[in-house]
Image (cartoon, rainbow, N blue to C red; front, side):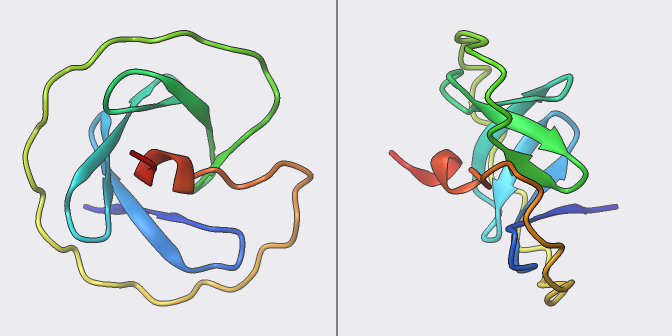
Length: 100
């Protein structure tokens, strides 16, 4: 089963399989440790809440290291727009996983 991740506007921007996060093309871009989301390189980005990656201003959780690239997970298909969930008070930071 694919767990999609969304931006605030409701568009699917990625998905999660196990402890890894992928973009919509199946490229590994991040990893999850508990609720903490880190880039694949290990640096902290934000928190996984529901189906979004948010900057909850909790501080720095350091670098958990690079686990290696799990490979391409393939294109899961697009589930469509789920609708805007409104602003939770925390900015969406999924795009930081895509920054090089």
